[in-house]
Length: 450
Image (cartoon, rainbow, N blue to C red; front, side, top):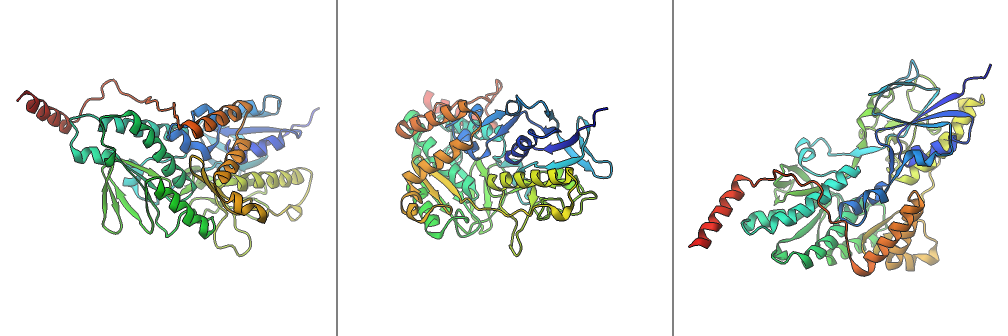
């Protein structure tokens, strides 16, 4: 009688989840990968979808396509809700899934730091839907502002774009917005672009905290040269959809606030039976096993896991290299346990920092650590840094189709600035004017008749 295969359940189809599933696909085990979506998303390029550079199929890849030749890997589309460690089952909205070993790789979501009003009205940017929402909204605001019946105050409010958060996502989004605005300026002839502004707000005194100080200053310089108002040491305390309120008492009228100020673990992680950090991430030991787990068969990797080396002051950042490196160690440790090894024999995870990089706009980027000394003068910032950023991101994209089309679009965009993805897809057939707009239009019509 054939022995039943070990059941490996992986929650999340992000960088860590896909990596560890690929490793286990070579073994004599059954793998179930659980995700709400049927695609793997390359989140670092979401900002390019939100600013009309790329389309969704160029930063997303069907999960099943990764495992076309791996008969032991199955995708289970469902929303994970919790873990029953006593019974060794994952609980989802489509039933329970038994496991012998469970890997939590569920990723993260936007952190609004308890500000419910901001969460309700600001735009997050962690999913394809959110990126598309930002794209449609920004393009729509230009069209709305161009209507002649708008009041000057309303027009200026609609043309004020605020990005909150000075990390890579915020910097990249702010820079890309200025380039989108430059294209709109050439094509919308009845709009005064002196009313248009892009503001980048950061609560601390510096942008890109993972970068050397000279590159932080360089980033601010480049953003300012592109027309971005950089507001450091500035904290947001509220936003009602019309007015952004700052801690210093300043109020900014705007209809667009893009929130890139932080991430937290998805809510599901709190129901997994482990100890959680302040940001909701689940604490893990050096062997990547979940702290407080009943059995030695629950691991966590990537953005949903909180891990600190020795005397570190804070957990490792929520970046792809952490997830992929943890995936390899978690795979090796689980295979040791399957083969009869003890917890004491498991490998300890040590993160190797590969450096950080961020693009500030077309042909401009900064690259932090990870460069050999002789390369730093050439590749730390500017055009060559942008080429390095482009090359690394192309390598990480899934599928030859994405590599080819994205490379072509980036090259064409570099030379022409063209963004053909400026398509508004969320138009409502009953998109009526507000009472204020109807009053303004009626007033204008009356004046024209006179």
